[in-house]
Amino acid sequence: MLNRLKKTLLAALIPTLMLMPHASAWADLSDSLPDIGTTPQAPPSPFLQAKSFASAKKLIEPLLAKQPDNASRILNRYTWSHPDDPNRWDLLAQASAQQGLNDEEMSARAETLALNGQLDQAITVLSSARAQVPVGSLKQACYDARINQLHQLQKRFKQYKKR
Image (tube, rainbow, N blue to C red; front, side):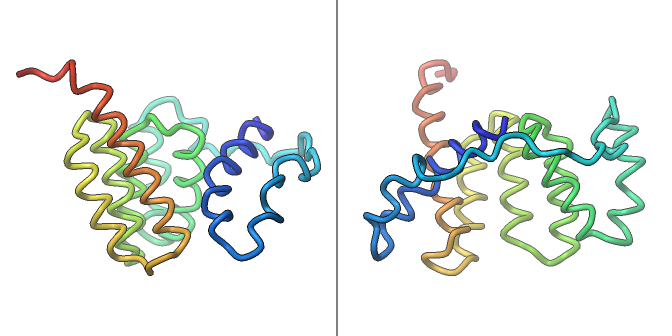
């Protein structure tokens, strides 16, 4: 899993890094990184082990009310490993809203919309999130990449749309 994560991150970062000065130094980044292998992991939280959304929501709601930053950390970890769970994306949007992180809230809402098949709305919301972050920032590059992915999904599934 770590190697897959490393490759995914590099695939997302290399185009951005190539725009930076001394880009040639980054060209062979994937070959020069040491193999990090596996590292011992802490036992997963009860939230991550919860089988149903209702039990997970019971566990996260008190934390969401008192410590939205910790709730965001847990939810980010969960949504990273389970990106197809719209309920957890919705909870992440709530935690981000409580912290005043409007762009992250919109990004999480966009993921929920995309998972529900509302790609047009997801792109619109994600474009709004993109407009709220500094120009040229890593967040903006990430939002741009996700918007491009959603556009590609739109093209791919256009033939299945009801006419």
